[in-house]
Amino acid sequence: MAEGKSQFEVFLAEQIEKYRGVAFPVYTPWLWRKLVRKVNPKILHPNPEDEFCDPRIGPNYGIISKYEREYEAAKRDHTRDILTETLTVERMKPDGYLLLNGHHRWAAALRQNVRRVPIEIVNVTHVIDIQKMLQNTHNDKRVVMDLDEVVLAAPGDTQVEKALPFPMNLSYRRRLRLGVPALFSFFKGRGYDIWVYSSKYYSLNRIKRLFLLHGVTIDGIVTGVKRGKLHRGRDREKIHELIANQYPRTVNIDGNSVVFIDSRTKMFEEYTLSGAPENWSREVMDAFEQHKKQEKSEAKSL
Image (cartoon, rainbow, N blue to C red; front, top):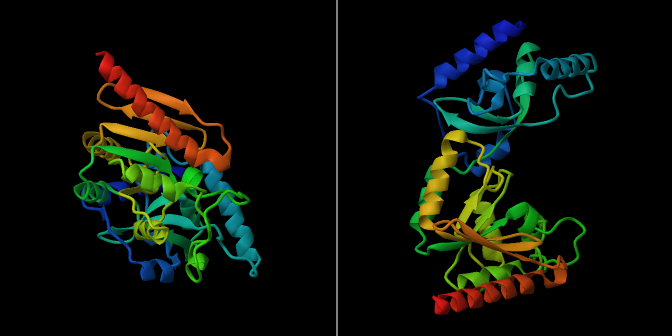
């Protein structure tokens, strides 16, 4: 597809218009995601929510040209793969896959007539998933943690939970931060739901199983996002509204602080932790107890 700039922009607009109002994401089973690893770039579709497709921003042709030169070099060197970095996609109806990451590489592949590109198919958390999760809970308060930055220990950390037994340890190589299961149990016993967020595209069932193997359950999983920054603009407000209506009270926990938030009054209170990993979970529990005592004291003074 040897198109010039204006031709590609026309093609991009046509693609977006073709699927507007008729396309929707669908769940991809595990085996499908494992077997389908390369596809023709022509069955990949631009994401209208991405700035690549925003007429005010649009494609960066310098980046596209850079990838085109890499493809040309790879074609000359037959020992090299045309494209080694995967494009992140989500299966969609009526056909093909929606691009979540890699629009510039996709554009370069089209312009260079690359026949097959490597993809990673993921299942992203959508509004309907959030609705199903909320239907299964009856609490009005929750605990929120970032899965990758807080719940899962970083490589090299020594304060970690015991490794899962064989063969589960081969599937779940990253260990939990020391004290995470105890914290989940602590808050569950006090009427809190547990939610985790991740910017990665994990399988929801895989994450649920990880915690079940550690003897605890979680109530909400949101993947493909950074906490508070959903990747789909049209979903952001809806998901925020659903969660806020269910949970007027939230406890935000990270490695250095615990924040108690009341969405009704817009008030929050933050407790700073020492940062010592061996004391992290105990300090979180202490912060919770201190906060509860303060609430009781304030209630008595009214």
